[in-house]
Image (cartoon, rainbow, N blue to C red; front, side, top):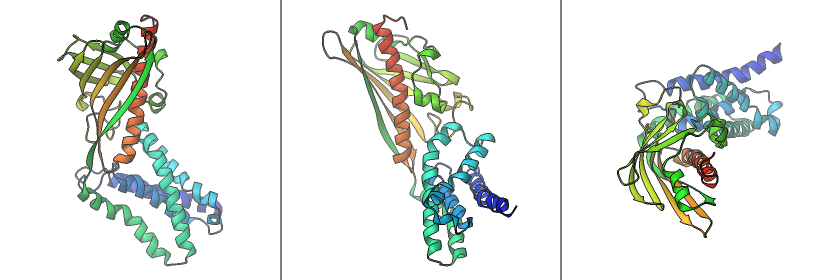
Amino acid sequence: MKRVFLALKVIAIPVLYALFLRIIFDLKGWERIFSVMTISFLFLVPFVVGAVTIILSPKEKIKSDIYTLAMPWVPITVFFVITVAFGMEGMICWIMALPLFLFASSAGGFIARRFLKQKKNERIYTSFVLILPLLISPIEHHIGAHKKTFKAYTSIDIHADAATIWSQVTRVKAIPASADKGWLTKFMGFPRPVEAVLNYEGVGGYRKAIFTNGLTFHETVTTYIHQQKMVFDIKAHPQDIPAATMDEHIIIGGQFFDVLNGTYELERINGQTYRLHLYSHFTMNTTFNFYAGWWAKWIMKDIQNNILQVEKSRAENRGKI
């Protein structure tokens, strides 16, 4: 019974701490001080969870490097399950945040163990660590987020003539689920592309890219060179996207993430092969663009590669797929 109680304490207290801060950091009206989309929450909260887990653990247990590395992952996992089960976070957000949470919790565990070995005042150390996210968050907000533009580039070689390829570029007919090869977006539960319709080929043309779950991109052609290049501005209206489709922290066109434009370029490689380039520009507006931008670029490239695969298959098979 004593061991069970100890195990519950080592897990429950860090989880309750994380849940408390999750609520504090998401309170309406406190956005200028606290926010979930900050380094203070995404790194310092799991860091403290890991530190507290090791502080509460038996001294003989923390001698093990494996225990110190992995034990902080247990309350992080419990926290993950609770927040998803009660709708506090979406699955997509958690998949992106989990690697950072696991790393930060282990880092907190190892630093706490090192401090405990020095046999300094444990209460002062613990008290300081517990309030660290609350101290740093206002400073982080004072510094502010910085909007940064990223580019996601993809390409594919297609064995077909220019006219056939271009007809698949301008208008993408309905894509069945069986043709979806976007493994990352499928794993994350991100909406998949369904079709793209264009009212006319030329500057000013309106192109609508439709995804599942009510996600729609409204695109306006800004540059058009027939069978060579098409550039289009992209707008997503976040108010029109169903709440169940995307978490508010990663909604396209929202406070933190937006897609600006897309470009198709068709390059002739030889008499039988063309290279179709597809790239897009998007912005991140966080204090951790280095991490969020990496994830966003990976997701955008997965979406683009998926579309290119469909266009290649249809061009090479004369639209039969």
